[in-house]
Amino acid sequence: MSNIDIRALLGVPKHANQHRLSRLTMEVHTDKLRIMASAVESYTDELIAALEAAEKRIADYQGLISSLVGVSSSILREVERINNSAGTGKGE
Image (spheres, rainbow, N blue to C red):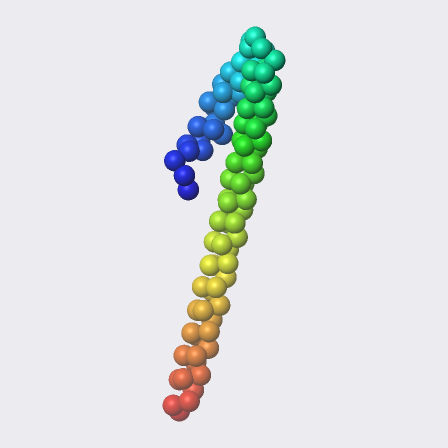
């Protein structure tokens, strides 16, 4: 992935960072800085929401892949069993 610590963005520090951004937005002294701080806050919230959604999708896909691997393994075992039975029956 990347060098970003996703756990830090999505975990407990997330709320502290959001609070700092909100406080910064309120405390800046110029309109230009206030607009910039507000934009950073908004983009940060969007980034965190996107990361949370991506983490959920990844977990869902991992579960689906595990299920598919399990089903594939079962099918392969059944095909082997049928082939072995057919091979045993041929020789007789």
